[in-house]
Structure formats: structure tokens, C-alpha cells
Length: 364
Ligand SMILES: Cc1ncc(COP(=O)(O)O)c(C=O)c1O
View: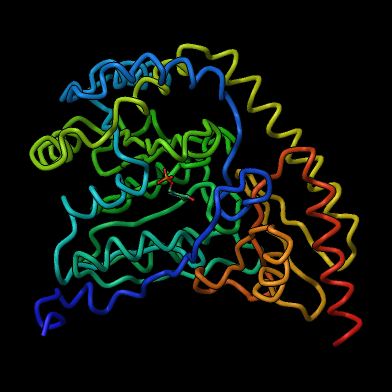
């Protein structure tokens, strides 16, 4: 029986069934994708096509140097990865062992738990307060001798708010002996970073993504910012097992955009305006409460009896794909997650949501 050959941790893993989601760029709103820099990326990627037969630079030196400059750290503080999810997995593989504990807020990003569980660790959760803030002392109270990693997304997914200030991050890093991993996937919108602290606090690790503000989700690129001693261990595993993990198209696209800081700044502003326009339209539906988020997605609470899951199913019929929040433990079923549609699709999305909610109200 194959099942007996499978590791216990994988046997016990809850698989997420995403279903078959079409490449519908207009109204595919379940992963907070963004649409930017297409022309810049096209040109960068085209130049790489004739080198498709060649392996890449094992050190990823050019990309590391650009990322170091963007974050005002040294190239030795940077480890590029195949999406930030791979960064989470790399940290788990290097540091977490069977019998360890990890601590994370709830609700938060489910991968923190799954990568830890994969290594045989137990996850200890700390519930966010009613307004979704994080009580730092409560978090510290959950850390024990057995804790190997404290995982925090800042801004948080799914609640979209900043959980910690830079001073609070420094305070926690000083207080604990284990690792503090701050996932700054939405940093460009949240505006708070602990990147500079990571140079001095060896137990502080920062994670970033190119999938959101940089609109490179399909190319898969993330990176770690950490102290050079930690980087050396992460590098040891990556250089040994997955030396070519970041493909040449992702590297070329990222290097090209990082050399255009004004364009990045302008596009962040444009994205924020696009999101504001969308949320203003959503707020006109009085059965909805739109949370204040600093992410590439909106989080909305349905104030009537319809659940996020029911809304998701109805919208699918209109070719609109959203996420209910059932994958997030500790988050209510009245919430749903929406990426930000381009302007020409916004009204249609809002109208369809309104129509579903009105119909449900009528038939309740
Ligand atoms: C907090 C957080 N971390 C990591 C990721 C994964 O991003 P990537 O596409 O870089 O793997 C996401 C994606 O939604 C996220 O919200």
C-alpha cells in the first residue's frame, strides 16, 4: 500500500482544492494579482528567449545586487527564491525539525502552518483581537523553549492590516531566542519594513514577493532579506539542491523593473487609486463592509445572511472568480476576498455582487 510509504506529515496534510481557474485576467480576483509593466517585462523576457537552452548564473549575482540596492542592504543579505512561498519552505527546511513548535497569529497566511507541519512541527496560534490587531504580549506568551519560528505577515493576509510597527518588531526580536519571520509580501503598500533591522538581528528574517505590486506572479519570484550568517545556511541548501530555482525570465524582468524606481513609484500610486475607486463602488452596497487593507486585495464583510462561499458560487456563473475565506482558520464565513479589477471591469463586478446579495435577500 502506497499510503504506508508516505510520510505521516504529508498523510495528515489538508489539501486545498483550488479547482480549475481559467486565465481570465479581467475578473479572476482570488489571488490579488496586479496588471502592470507588461511592456517592460515583454522586452526583458524576449531578450532572454535565445538563451533558453542555458542554465543560469548559480549565484544570481546581478539580481541580488539590484535587490540589495532597492533595500539598502548588501548582496550577501539577499536570497532570491521561486516565489515567496518557496522562501517560507526554504526557511522551514533549514530550521524546523520534528517536535518543534511554531507560533503564528490567527487568522493569517495558511502556508505558515503547512510548511511547519511538513517538517513535523506543532503550530501554536494566537488569535487576533476583535479589530484584527495583534497583542504583542499575548504573542510573546505563546513562545516557549520549543518554539523555533514565529511567523507574522505584515501586512497580514487575510485581514490586510499591519500587525506590527518597526519598533514592535525590534522589541520582539530582542525578547525571543527563536526566529522571527516577517512576511512583507505587500510591503510596497504597507510602507513598514524591518529590512534594516535584519542586518543586526540574526534571528530576524524578512520575506518579499514580486507577485503582487510588481505583477510577476506567473514568473515566480520572491526573496529573503536576512543577516549573512542566516543567509549562509539558506544558501547552503539552495545551492546544493535547487541552485537554478529562479528562472531566467523572472530574473531579467525583475532586474529591468528595479532599474526604474520612478516607474515603480508611479505604478504604486496608480494601483492605490484603482483600489480606492473600486472600494468606493463596493461601499455603495449597504449590505457590505469594506475593511481598510494595505494589500493588493480587498476584504469585505457581508452584513446580511449570505456567506462568502455562497457569493463565490453565484459569481462563478458570471465568470467572476473570488475567494471565500474558508481556507483561513479563525476567519468568519461572512468575509470574502477580492483582487482589484481593472477599471473597465469594476462596475460589472460590483453590479454582479449587488445582484446576488439582493436575490439572496429576497429568497431568504
Ligand atoms: C502573506 C503572503 N505570503 C506569501 C504569499 C505567496 O506569494 P508568492 O506568489 O510570492 O509565492 C502570499 C500570496 O498571497 C501572501 O499573501
